[in-house]
Amino acid sequence: MGRDLHNRRLGNLTNEAQITGKTNHEGLSTSAGTNNRLAGFGYASAGNMTSNSALGTTYVHDAENRLSWTSGYRYVYNGDGNRVEKCVAATSTTACPTSGTNGTLYWRGIGGDTLDESDLSGNPQEQYVFFNGRRIARRDVHAAGATIAVHYWFLYVSSVSALFAINFTG
Image 1 (cartoon, rainbow, N blue to C red):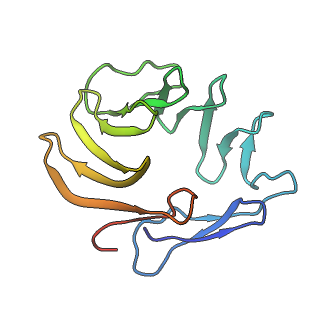
Image 2 (image 1 turned 180 degrees about the vertical axis):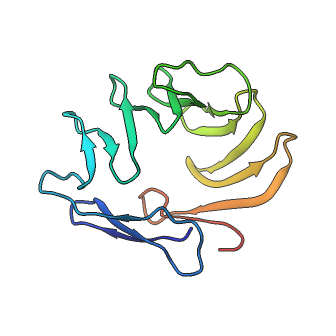
């Protein structure tokens, strides 16, 4: 991942610059106000981000404050609040198709962690490896279930979340 990240004291990501020689870059350069909100972004009264003026993007949230639609994708959650589906949808009220390849199903374990991801027809896309209750790796697969030879290993420090995701090339 080609990222050089800068955070404010309150934890807001305010700058993300491209690292020379890396191609994955999303760019961000803004400031955060005393209300802990980034400049150039719209927010609802509950604090949910509703728009990004630089990208012309709109974000729609459901009654539980979960992202339900943005940029042509709809997100569906189960009763426990875990995302179980992402699909291509023209609006936040467009129903997700029941099959096909224009979306993702998230297959969860008993604890709610995503174990596998598939397309809407159930063809595998990614599988996650856990050890001692933590996600330690991701295996990318294609529709036939074979490994696509790209593994991502998650490195942890102390008891915090994953800090790095690396593959065999670094």
